[in-house]
Image 1 (spheres, rainbow, N blue to C red):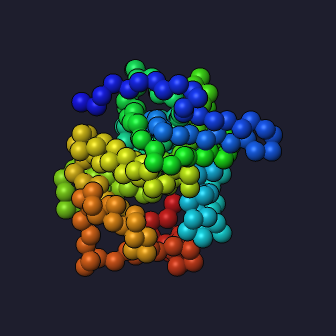
Image 2: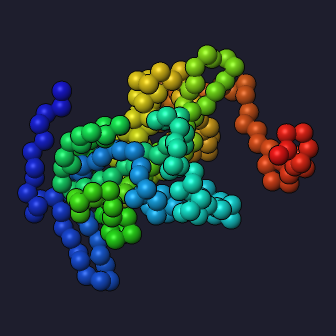
Image 3: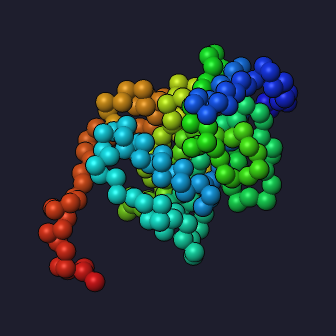
Length: 240
């Protein structure tokens, strides 16, 4: 069991420059995190984070989503059972501890990281969380996943679509936290596997996943039918 958290004094935890030209928050010594399911209040942040991961991969020319289209994808009026439809875990950070959540379908995961170097939140207003009334909370990243199916298994698995951390929150162990949380969801809810596509050029991410138990199958290659090649089949068999 983790030791009880002690609330550090404000002076040793956070230094805020609230000037209009440089509105930054610097967190030192400890940073508190909360991993929770996304809600509609997160839409604008999800949109920004999805754009940023496209920037990271130099794919912004392919980014077609809008906040409206993401709302239709993620927050349907009649959603599938929990974790079967498109699901997003939001990673939040704060210089002060989070309260334990109650009465939620997925209990948020609360963690504390000891910092070896200061962490600067340079987009305070852009990424301030809108989830609850705790005002010193910032969106640091996300994990996106959903159920998938295979004729090799008699139960569904989870497909891990993407994970993204904003630059200030990398190299702290938060990627491991997010991936591990999704793996726990799979293991604790009857899913038979957790699958993903791993970029071989991203050695740090590749090593992270392998070290956490991901098995790489070299005999398979990722394939994708899309764009004009896909549209060749429009209005043929299977068309509406």
